[in-house]
Picture 1: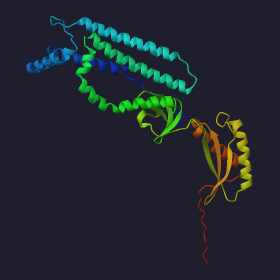
Picture 2: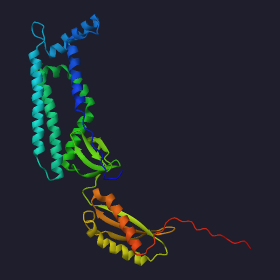
Picture 3: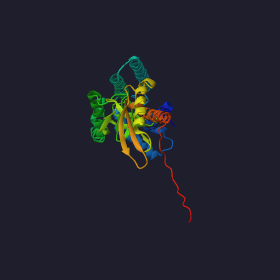
Picture 4: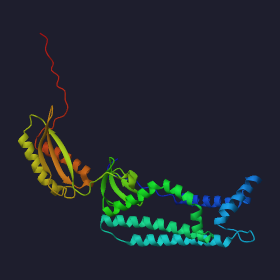
Length: 325
């Protein structure tokens, strides 16, 4: 597979999310109405009913004074969820209309989308609890110990959020930059509040927590160097080979202007190997073109040396056969 071949991104499963929400709603209804749990015994239903009266019914009173189910609250909850979803889609549509010309702008745009998503979810949860009749402050106070436990468990999450904020405002990298983190080199696809997505030339995507990106190299800040090592035989004319290479370096910016913005450089004799003289050629290129530029250098050097009659050695075995006296 060539470097230009990209894997098609997989579509996110919206059906799976809907099924998950439906399952959660069914479980909550069964917990709130033990009489619907036909698979439970009488003692288990009584225990579940006692739990509802003590905890769930205390914070989320879904029954009327006569003991019936308050359907109007359920309808209001469904309308609120639909309204939040519509409001979210409208905001995302507005964000999509924003046109940016810089990598920083694209990064801020992606971060804004993440903030909107989390804000709508948090607002929906709080407003939904109010519709169900729950006192949010009472719920938070009653779950103080649980919140403390979750707080200790969410330290890494908070660390990821603050790391994402520092990445954005310090300008360490932006969407579209090519970076190298822990030996993984790729293009930044998105920077979220919690994680960052990096895609390599093969289309493989690595998702990293923002707090794990501690040491990185931003390869987009400076031009990269494509290096080509070409070997000639010891019996070849070195001065003629150098002349051919320098003439080729003069032509390459005209032949491939999008690949070589400046003239490549002939650096000289790199090494005296066992069976060849190794010559080094370098070119300043954009990081995204480094592999293609290296391939083009190798190809054009081979063609130029062949045209100039310069022999490029290859492994071979010479056998001397002696004659018997």
